[in-house]
Image (tube, rainbow, N blue to C red; front, side, top):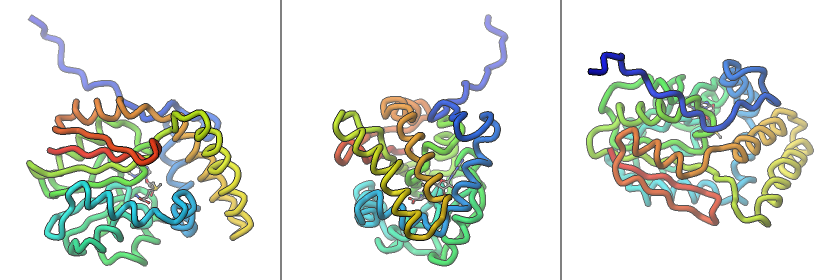
Length: 252
Ligand SMILES: C[S@@+](CC[C@H](N)C(=O)[O-])C[C@H]1O[C@@H](n2cnc3c(N)ncnc32)[C@H](O)[C@@H]1O
């Protein structure tokens, strides 16, 4: 008989510790929070630049494709300045049925200016929400910023009602050998330079450098799909646009 206590699985980090940005893994979340606090006023501009202005159409279409409808209770994890929420409200979701969670006070302050919804400070790995309280959970472009994918997906499952859905949008490292250096140049060099000329805000350049590093170092889609399935999600699917924008959809 095995009388060893069940040990929790080891943390599944989305990328290796990026020691060129922070001294130790324990310093990662504070570094990320500071980065987003400082870049918050420019974040919507960065988001538009990275998608050639198509980011809001894409968020709206992805939410619709994943099955978000107007009567649902929605949780937006890593809500940032609220671009996923804005897209959901455009689809007719009632603002009274929406909660956004994010650890960056700067991003939440921008979000509050734009969206009449409940916004809470918190992390995806420890959601400040009751069990089985949402029909739909979404997370836009933030998977790379959590500490442990297993804990994140466990939390998604806990707060979803049976039959609920999760949608994760993420940028995936391009496999095409022509696209990869072009994208690296665009995100690491061009966008930071235009950002500097625009507002003389150094934090936008730092955000873009870090953003690219996390994209290049992120675990592959197969690991994300396996982690969702291991957390008990059903019908886990990934679809892509241009092999770079990934939509992960799964059911509770
Ligand atoms: C690139 S922004 C995405 C914002 C928004 N979801 C969107 O679609 O534009 C990443 C967000 O993740 C947040 N974040 C960082 N660490 C997090 C964590 N551990 N849990 C949840 N959100 C986190 C940041 O504060 C930031 O607002």
